[in-house]
Image 1 (tube, one colour):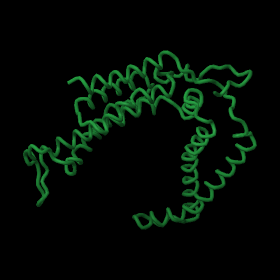
Image 2 (cartoon, one colour; image 1 turned 60 degrees about the vertical axis):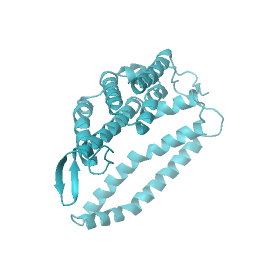
Image 3 (cartoon, one colour; image 1 turned 45 degrees about the vertical axis):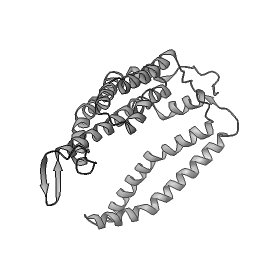
Image 4 (cartoon, one colour; image 1 turned 90 degrees about the vertical axis):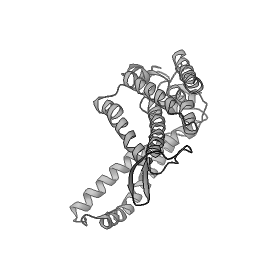
Length: 266
């Protein structure tokens, strides 16, 4: 188990964050909805998906500290996206065996039926439920806290967790590199106009400097980690601990119990 660095207060920064879910251990917020997510992948139960989606949305609204944009995306964009996705999936999902239902639209040999629409909406609701349940852990925990929790509670070697975390932190870095390369090409008159062919040419032109920048950043990161003795010892100190408290156990038990009740009780 990783120890707290001497002379540093063992106070978890998340204890002062807004939103009560953010003050839970990241492993708890990930584990609580996990059975529901796995069950919805294989269980075709629209009622259960709707109930679990509503519960997850309630948790996010009350405990995730979402801003206006987050609330708008959760309460408005997500339902509208589900309807659009369901309507699109109505053309592709398997029609129930009891019949295709009423024909709503027809283009040549292609028929859009009420049964297909219902099946598409049911599939879209399940996909939305899985996504919203995943947000319970995704929006309420940070990468460093999750890495520390995996080390301290799951005994995952810190060489693994922090290497993965460093790889994830490459993503915003690469986004910044792309922005710099695009600006440099525009200054030099390298913009080849609109259209898909021009877009492919631009990306081909950006790929070489982007790859070179990524390799330089990876090399600098490796040198910095070596200079700080990363991997030289079996354990490492931490600025603070990510505790597992009784409320984390309650959250996990409540999430698993609710999943069992919703899926098993008719």
